Length: 195
Image 1 (spheres, rainbow, N blue to C red):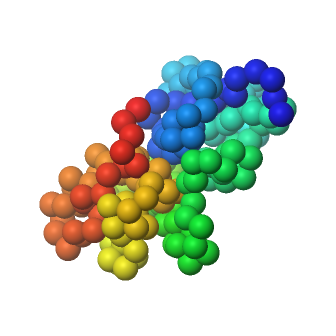
Image 2 (spheres, rainbow, N blue to C red):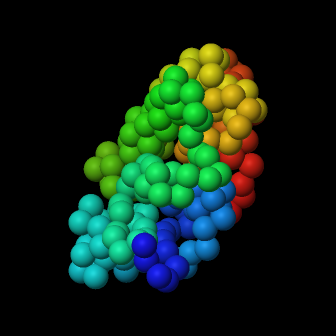
Image 3 (cartoon, rainbow, N blue to C red):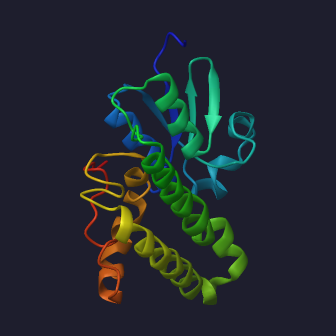
């Protein structure tokens, strides 16, 4: 185990970084933040120094226990496996699978499709439409799942993994509510955490 504080390389607007900050807060893990501005200077994630930490040139990256881990869900799984209390995943295997399914849907199925790097490829004139379509498609799928899994949070009434994937979507939840037909998505809290 690492003697010093974990170091989170993060960007304040990054939903992936939010997920990790929420998991760290829920587990009461004290850490240091090194901001990586994804816009300034053409994107600080492209610096040689940061690429050595995370060859994907993405945030977050977490230095902990003598290793550096990239990708928010991998970081959260590591925290859960090495610091099991309080739990972020339910004990029940079916509920745990539902949490992972929801987390993957958000982290892999919605969020990357409207990232800055993707939107640059889509072109300025199509960015808003592209992002809205990706979010709407994902929210419709999420709504279908949450109708059978949601309680106070994504899966039941205890804070768990799927709920820390939602904070990114808090600004979009009002939009979801205005779309109609998404009653399970719009009222869910973001793990009760505000960064």
